[in-house]
Amino acid sequence: MDTRVLTFLFNCARRIKPVGAVSDFLCKYSSAAFFLIYYAGAVHLIFTDIRALIFYLVVPFCTLAASWIIKNAVKRKRPFNGEKGGYSFPSNHSASAGIIAFACLFINTGFGVPVSVFALLTGTSRVTAGIHYPSDILAGFALSTLFAVPGFYILPFVI
Image 1 (cartoon, rainbow, N blue to C red):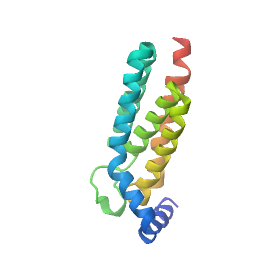
Image 2 (image 1 turned 45 degrees about the vertical axis):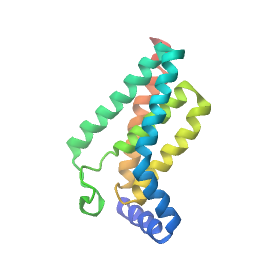
Image 3 (image 1 turned 60 degrees about the vertical axis):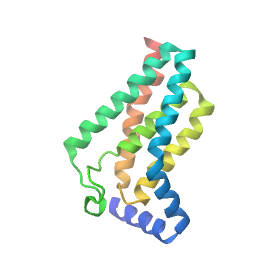
Image 4 (image 1 turned 30 degrees about the vertical axis):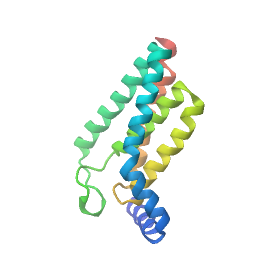
């Protein structure tokens, strides 16, 4: 099923040129955009809420560390014979986009909602570009959710 969904979305993106162009653009530039979004949020918190800044920094770090550990333990090859190098499962792009979206929701819902939509588009673009299987993307988002719920929505109110 995973391979069929990947093949279908990848072929759609190659046949429908605007979809492929957007997908390729997101794959190329979304990391830089999320980097800027994340650091803008950190700068905002430096001036408004130092306590929240601690969670804002620690939770994404833990998420990406877990993603890296899982990726190197599973060692799943990327679709299409690993053209892009590295391992596929879970998607670090999806995990980082997801946790940054949660971090933005944590500090400001109005800012976090569009970032969340951008995260979903980024994850989808990784499949349409043939870099990840759909399960890689879902695992990345699930991992970010697993860390975000306690890290942003439980611990700050308990500690």
